[in-house]
Length: 105
Image (cartoon, rainbow, N blue to C red):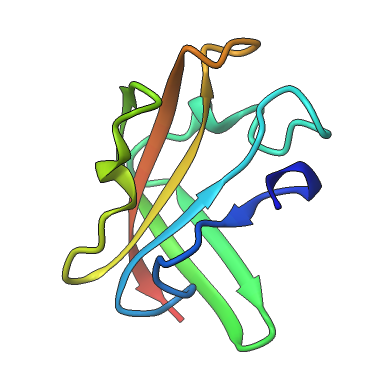
């Protein structure tokens, strides 16, 4: 549940798995875990940890989409990650989306 912190989007790849692992979180409410998502730039690392291991992704880019643009959760070949949150800060008018690729497990 997104109100408890970053949440794995249902039906998307598990961290480190084949496909697109999608994680959503709030920017300003519920502790604002993705408050600084807009500061991520290509080449920076995104590190996920779970009971199975640690997964390092590298940011490849970002984009702003409408709330109806659900292609961001699509599953494509490869080991990718998509992070998203409302945009701009304090508004739900759009979504800021950050993309990355797995580089280490």
